[in-house]
Image (cartoon, rainbow, N blue to C red):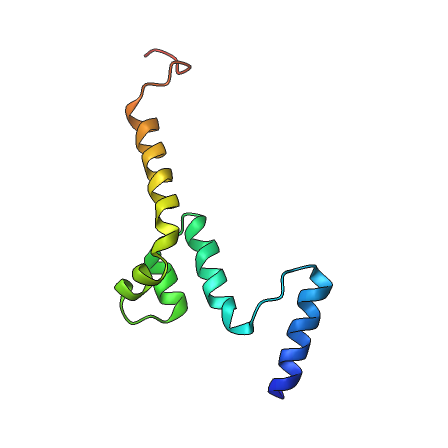
Length: 89
């Protein structure tokens, strides 16, 4: 496919879908952010992006990690704080 055709088709599809105007180059970054925000392990993101070392992935997407820290804290709270709705054994 001719690169200019790819570019124009991509821009047209974004507009038709009502999505923001982004560069084609931004797609891997966007995908990585979304995947990390949904709790997928960073190792999976590293492999999908083709990074040779996980430190590159973690350094590049560290801004997403605070959300993951908050979610981890909430899960730990759920494990440690007894659920009063749970039946007594």
